[in-house]
Structures are given as structure tokens and as C-alpha cells.
Length: 121
Image (cartoon, rainbow, N blue to C red; front, side, top):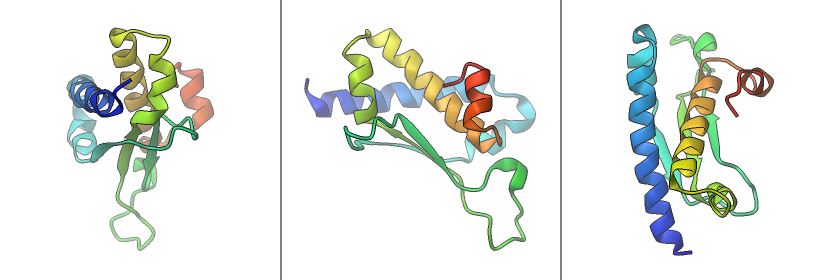
């Protein structure tokens, strides 16, 4: 597998799936969600991580607090390699879409358990 070409494919799918997610987001949250940066990094093959949310979740944001941190979503290309070995491109795109929804779910304050219960894993 050409890792650089795969990385570019993940970046491309992530941009498109993020746009689709935001287009379908509730209108009252859309602008807030659009302001959260998302990046795609190569990542480490050994972690198995698809993505990560960091920052202060929306329900806990307080612009006057020194403990509110900017939100950020990161997807990791290497995390998708084992998945792609058993799935086609439409399957990869669907997985990327779920990971994006999952990380935005963390921003909205949902725990891992709540996201799994809702089928967003």
C-alpha cells in the first residue's frame, strides 16, 4: 500500500464527510460545529486510534474560565489501515463519517458509552 496516497485519500474523504456532517447538523449548532478545526495526521500504526477530540466540551464551555480549552478534532490515517484491508472505498468513507460524528459527539458532551449505545463508534 502506498501510504502517502492512502493518507491523501483519507484527507479527501474526511473533508467531504465533514462537509456532509455539517450540512446535516441541526441549524442551531451548525456554526459552532463549523468552528471546530479538524485535521488528518498520519498517526501511529500501533495505537489503533481512528480519531481524537481534545478541548472543552460544549456543555462545559465558559468564555470567562481559564480552564476552557479550544476544541480540535484529529483523524489518524494509520488507524484506518487495518480497516481498509478488509473493506472497500465506500466502506472506508462510511467509517470516516462515523469517526467524525463520534468526535463531534464528544464535543457535544457524550461519553464513549453513550456514543456506542447510539451506534456512533
